Length: 327
Image (cartoon, rainbow, N blue to C red; front, side, top):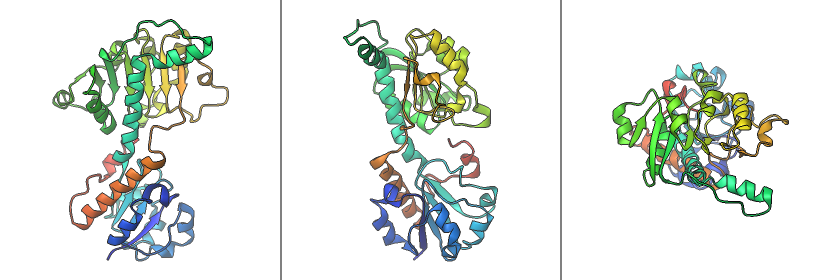
């Protein structure tokens, strides 16, 4: 039986419902470790074949990897591996799989809920009713029949969101220069320019990964071009938006709403206008997995373990190329 070890901040949070079943397939050779404690006990890695990890996983540098000469695979029960990966890791013949797809499920659910609510201008009515202490006059809303929803980037989350939106009577448009017309047709999505997405959409939902190339991708000009009463939703990364320019437009355009689950920096600085603007909704990065949702990530890793032991291809394998575009 292969030797395994858990190295992460909170085993129960991610692997609470799968821990005992994992032990049926892998001999767990020591107590759970954290990023800090494993550095103080590198000898625990000597015979380890498999590492189960998650948030707070170990830095996979040369010292760590040399201490684990038998390491064959890492099962990462969370999303991006960027903070733990090194160039040295990619030189080794070690498989890395991640529960990024499982972590994307609640992001899609969050975005879907806010798209539908925004098509009713829900936050406008909530906030203005509280402000006026009375039910305010109803005005025209886009509604979820025949309205246009724009998706920025059709990665795994963007595609999944489009699939969910098929159940509603909305028109889908999207910007993603790496998606073919054929793939867009399968999603029932019209590809267009980034500027068109903002100009034509009643709601824009952003799902672009944070890369050097995408920093500051969304400018004040994009917000200025938005339709009256439109909404912008960001569950991706705050650095992709030129925040100062967005704020300037939101001050001038109280009809627009911005629903921001991410900002840059995160959280916003103490005196940020984002806290005060009536047309900004801030949530503290809750789009990803929380509480019981985290158990889904452990379940994904258990399924990957079974595939690995059966000699099958890993469904959520992370390659060096793939790791560069993970949020």
